[in-house]
Length: 240
Image (cartoon, rainbow, N blue to C red; front, side, top):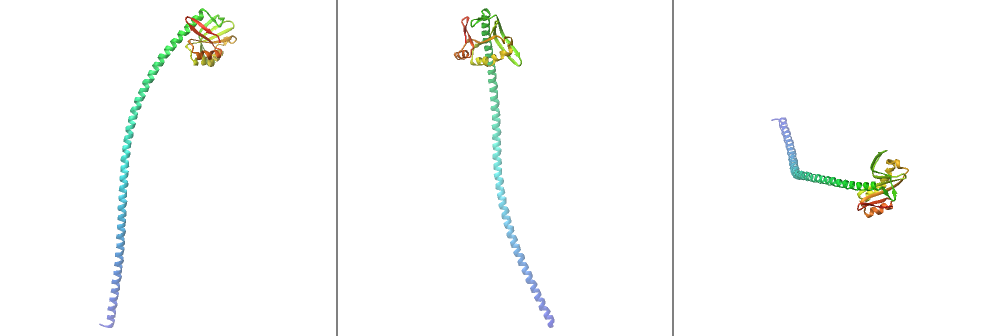
């Protein structure tokens, strides 16, 4: 073997050795990268497992909350149904009560109207036979004069008239303070519109009843209202 061949062989061995060393180094780097990849994979897997566990816990919590909500909705529905039944029962009771009140009001109104008609008939018949009030004789007596003029509507129970005077009488079976208030606040003003034919007459106003409470008597006399009250079969007059 020549020197050149020996030299070439040695060079070839050196080159192969260098290649083997480089291959070994690459293998070591590949192994290190593989280990790092394995470690990253394990960390990713652990993170995924933690996330999955957290998700499962959250889902379990949501499931529990949904179950509680369903139970609450069911209880609410049951309560609403119970309330609807209770409301229906209450409305039925209210309707029955309203019907009773209407019947009682109708009965009371009928009785009140009947009593009022009796009182009006008594005073009308008594004054028709003897049309004398507060010491004055009257020529005419009119019963239940109703009128509607210029948007004003009212009715006057008895109206007695002579040449110079007109006496307007409000009649009740039992007088109440509201009857006196209506006479003072409404009827006296309405008479100017509804009884214009007596505008030049001296006006006199009276309240007649079978029963006159003391508070009504005192208030009426203080306002210049004459009082008429039944005493047996005759009329007792108290001038204001």
